[in-house]
Length: 529
Image 1: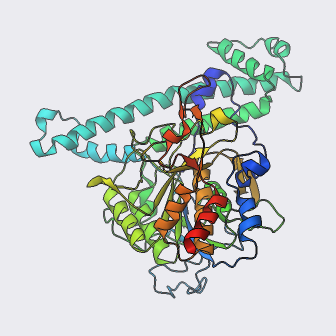
Image 2: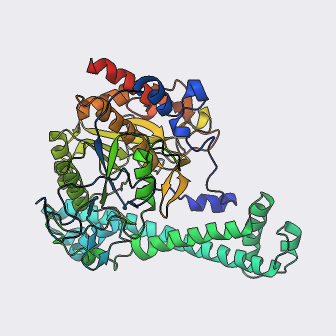
Image 3: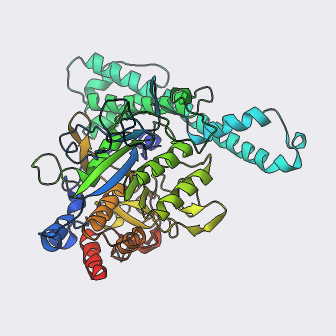
């Protein structure tokens, strides 16, 4: 699933739906603590002081995501172009198994459409196990199937709990939206203040509590129209959970037309690069490589890069078969860095992804992955895909970087409140809050997530591979971690409110630091010599 964080129920309890605050600058992730007073990645400083006038080679970064608006003014000149393919002739000119793959490929599209929504993996697993075990007890199951049956029981309980949580929240948001829109209608242009709202005489079961939340938001300066829009977002979010994520009767895979049971299959899909919603992928692609110095929008991290778009992530959980196929496509078509801003709590076929990761490692390709937005310790809770091998979890891929998200809002909030962390399973942090980057319809937007931190790091990796091509994927990984800025301070554990539990920042990741391009380039210069 595209990594996102919508802790909407918390905002109900707080009586506020102010989901984001603006950062200190639209390009804060490029800034330098010493020069600018902001703990960005020192990107500008690196270009001005270390890389100016130096030669570089073009590198290809694959973005496995929801799709990219390849005609965006800030991206169209940096999109990867498959020179071996003749556009639109319906022939696999370069014999790579994919027809007319000019800018990449789409593994969740078919001859008759595109997958937009999909289940979460827990739902797919629940559906699979239910066909075999529904209505049975442990006594009905053979000894060799006991472990599978127990997994079915655990998944069933977790799935039911998720449904039970989402249903009342959809009802709650729907009711708040109804009352808010009624208030707007009855005010009929009058000022939205406490006195005028209370004078409307709106009543009914449960309405008093809803009105009190509306009044608190108005007193805090909220615009009612904006408040209504955010509530609609809540309704849509929880409706999506119930209609798609956890709906066992919904399965859109027939759109793709592949043999889903064949995990080794390749060549399926189509060459539609955007898909139904390219917001997430367009934003990620812009962070990595939006054209630098063109005077519009924003600058990507990497200055000599081509973005290969590979669509494999729906609104729902990505499928392991598609992730593995996407990694292999990227590797076989020249990518040296792959960004993966997605993740999930369950895995259908971890082995097929492991084999693709090993294939990328053999071909010297670096994989950069977002750690997730659940405020969880990844040393304790599962987050897939990851760099551990199923048969030997202690053995990890040497071409993998797992990225947590950094906030800009002061020392106590250095790790983003939503970011996953882990002293063993998160490698390093990078800027991931209020990151301003490309958006569909030739637009720009500032959003937050480890989804943004991962491409920030991937951009730095691309710079190292571009200016120092002798460095291997494992070299780049080591340099990024070793050159990271170590923050010697105690910080709130992600998910904790102010005054909550604090730990040394160093305890939240393997490196204990924040990605810094200036330091990384300096270290690369020394190693290259």
